[in-house]
Length: 404
Image (tube, rainbow, N blue to C red; front, side, top):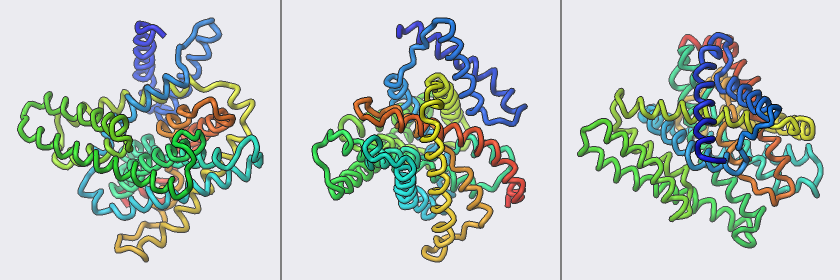
């Protein structure tokens, strides 16, 4: 696709996002859901008119993973309330690491049993599916929380879980993909665990070093524009160094670097506004491009696999939240999470950009890539159109819109 065509496409998508935003508010539909519909309709009209959108799985993945994902992760980490985060760090890490790993395995087992085709959909395919479906993305729900005045702790639990489990899911997916493709040679489960630890904690270390170095640089800079440029450099440089040079988790590096710089950020100002702008652009383009990449064949050929994936995700999430979260305050010295919070966290665990980026990164040499990708798209659409649109009534039912 030629550069002018790319510019016209992206510009047109942004104009569409701006037009749809007031409509989403009026219809009480998450903007992300409306963007998916708009992207799909626009792409189908272009195809009917004999035009090529130029969007392919390969270039969509690269755009999301290397351009948009560092923006989304860094913005969330930079703007999160660090003090409140550390007060709730134990439950957030519990949700984002052990509970996420359990959710991935439960989802994999349920999908594997539901499809029941060991030759066409082996166990490793189910593990890949479980890993990519375990990355939560509560963007639409957190925005709704802010509008409705939901307590900061509930919003932070969901947002913090998403922030950390995205990194966990991406690293876990990478391990399973290496096993599936044999890229790193034969790998035992012990090797896989060691590889996961190296990539995960190596990314944390790389991000910590990058964040502290850039924090020192920012202390001697007073110009807000230059400070903003430093944060952008930090996001992309930490990601690139971690992924390309150190071969550890770029997402984990960006997350930690964002938290380090966010500790000393100004409460309001140009830097924060810039990152809110960046995140809006990235989210809008991601979900519009998701709509462009959806095909009717996914629903006609893989509808049953989609339903199995949706059921697997819901059941695994329910088991994780309602079985283990109530035990958390009995095991660890943390404030108990009320039942109303648990129900909202269960239903508000949406899937989004990370799940789609991972699904689109699957090599087509794997026989089951199309099935996994279709399941991922089906689950994301379900969470956007069913879960995200019904969280509001759930919040009102529990009177959580009064800050309870």
